[in-house]
Image (cartoon, rainbow, N blue to C red; front, side):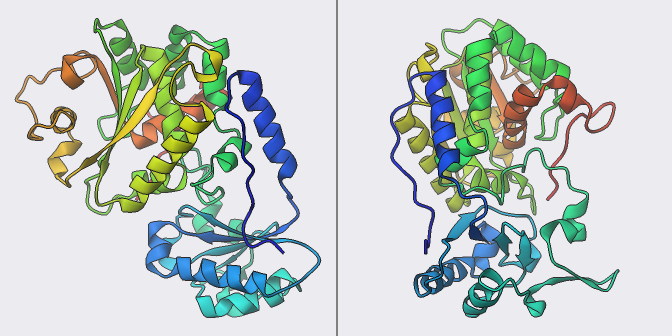
Length: 385
């Protein structure tokens, strides 16, 4: 019986073919029909004790000896925080709500080993008066079309293997091997992607401005400050799918000619900071960040800058000043366009987390696919707090 998925050590990726071989190797090790206890370990569920629940499952699994392996896996936020801790038993996708560590033995013995449902842990649709067995049956999930949150709640955010296994870094490989910077910008323009930070400025136009601007150095900044009260969309993504943030920034870097990215994140998001540092270290070790990425000649590195919690630093010029070590305060009108004059006076693409996470999906699925979602003036999906 397996308490946690074991991961192998992998050689440094030096070509696009290496990435594809690694992906096939990871998928070959997967056991899609294995019983898996997926425990939400996003901030919301952690606050309700999900880490204790996960440890209880690990202990319970070690004490059993069935013929098949049982995997205990932690993921980022599934979005149903009010009902946490959330546990999903796969491959049946049975969802249990408000799980406590005391429930672990019964879930393993009854649901995992015998296939029996535990009535008290199922969500009840009060409108229909019925118990919901599967995640897809719950009204909260039924009408969701997840683009930004496509991997959250399904992969271990601390596992680059999980991310690669679901197609992670394929968009970067396609960008570097098959597209020119101009084609990347055209694709983003045609998709209709607008900035998700609030202003709604067309992302492709912003990238094009920075690409065409003169500068000895160019920068990519991801705004993960998220100071709006009660807003946790960016936090959920950075916690649950940090590699998608890195990948979107790298595609942007290639498109505009930047070699360095900075993620500006609130220090009040400690779990986000840990997961981002882990993702950066993993990508660097595998050769997906740094010099000559996948043998393409493209260099890119990412660092994290933690904000001190000033709401005003979510504004672009204030954020840039804060990164430079100065007082984070918006510059007076007319403010300089950071796409032209940004960090250290250089052209700087500044987008928020959600905007960057849309980019890999657009590159892989095409501009027309993304443009087919949403409204006439606002393409794609939008995460809500």
